[in-house]
Figure (cartoon, rainbow, N blue to C red):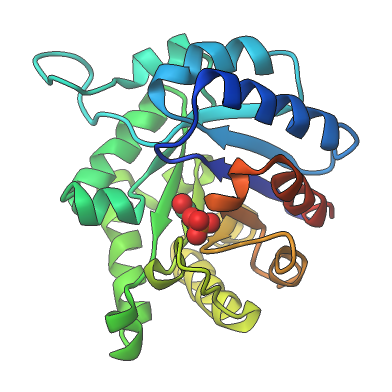
Length: 251
Ligand code: PEP
């Protein structure tokens, strides 16, 4: 059975005092929840403080993006080595906000994914369709292309050391959650696509759903056969809500 995983994506929210209080409460409220993996992906400037607060606890941490380059004249960028300096386990790559607002395409995302793995980080690869694409009935095509861009560059074997987050863009931050069946259908499609390359990896890979997961819809979503947890935006900023979502992820 795959272990459930709940990862918070704080996006560009927080400050030192708020983060500390939030994590104190999350640590307290999730202390008995040891059957699932829990992580928070935080803004770069807070990695040092988060490392200090979370080391030797049951909660892991990571970043929300990373440079595809090792080092050099890339003003404003952060490398995988820098993330390792702060004990990151995970890094989100290809979040739809990075694709839409910062022009990251599937090729760049694949390079970031490869850089992360090369440094021993686990990429949380986000893929998902827009509302227009869903209404145009090309969800599988879009998600398949996003996945294949990574498989072509990194090889299907690389998926063994990654997490996939299916995040329909129309459900992110909108309060519109995909129904459990809508999410399950796409997860099943992704798992089958991976199985076409490698059945063992397909059965083992952790696949998260993301898009307005809340305390009151998490259990239903996580109960679906191919959904192994969630990537949580807004609700990860409220300790009780995030802890309740983590609780829903107990196998
Ligand atoms: C996200 O940021 O990946 C996300 C799913 O956000 P929200 O939960 O707020 O929709």
